[in-house]
Amino acid sequence: MAKKDLDWGNLGFNYMPCDYSYVCNYKDGAWEEGGLTDDHTLTLSEDAGIFHYCQEIFEGLKAYTTEDGSIVCFRPDLNAQRMYDSAERLVMPPFPIDKFVDAVKQVVAANADWVPPFGSGATLYIRPFMVATGNVIGVKPADEYQFRIFVTPVGPYFKGGDTSVKLAIAKYDRAAPHGTGNIKAGLNYAMSLLAVTEAHNAGYAENMYLDSQSRTYVEETGGANIIFVDKQGNLVVPQSATDSILPSITRRSLVVVARDILGMNVIERPVKFEEVLAGDFVECGLCGTAAVISPVEKVEGDGVDVTFPDCVGTSGPVMKKLRETLTAIQTCAAEDPFGWVCKIS
Ligand SMILES: *Cc1c(COP(=O)(O)O)cnc(C)c1O
Image 1 (cartoon, rainbow, N blue to C red):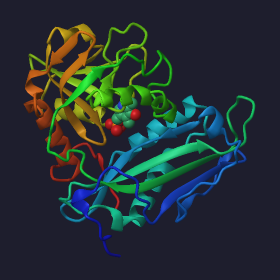
Image 2: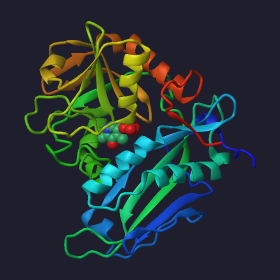
Image 3: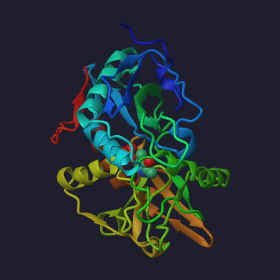
């Protein structure tokens, strides 16, 4: 076993097949044993449910090398639980939580040579997903599924350092009230591609979506939750009255870090877009596995131009402290008081 000869410091966010994937099929009402494979392709019937009625769910997490050379990942049990919930919502057979965590450990350990070395800034991205493989022609759930995990090394999110981004106010909606915005399903992304393409073409990193029922409350972006710091220094975390925000594991971890480690006051509540317009917030950040927190300096849209003064150019002091504290726990550079880090080897 030797590390692959890759230019670890210059990896992008691209797919590179590694040695092994994990695969497990659901047939005759039960999940099979499952195991590792070196086949990185799927061959499916033209009538497989995924192609017609879009039964697909996924997860995303990362494995890292710590300073002492161990390989770890972060709270995989929460990814397992969220995928379980996503499956139930799309009438797919939930993949057992323990089996999910075990599969993550197996596939990362089998691809240890592909886990970027400590200090490179790169990580091994882990992508579990499940698709309907059984034939379906009338609209109904399929009766066969495949759960699969592939891994791929990816570069650091912040290539040019910790640089703030700009958001556009979306003119489209992301998620219907009480729809599927709270699960991690490919269908939520298919309908967001036009919005994000238009935002990118206009020079924005992402869209800020408001609740689609009233267009009054801040929800999230296409792929990351939003957090704010108000003038009093409170961490303000938007909640959705219509259950249409994706429960980000990074955001939920940051809430605990802010409250229990940094001693901050954390307020989780619906946040009106009017409060953003009124300049109530001095910092804004996007949170998700990829970047932990990306600072936001501006939100712009039809006649709207709001600046978060402490995040102009780069992270404000609170976002910076939050990111450093969580990253230190994730990489075992700091103590892990919550038992969040999962050791793989
Ligand atoms: C995956 C995702 C996030 C971030 O979740 P993490 O668990 O922190 O990676 C946020 N919003 C949406 C819509 C997502 O799909």
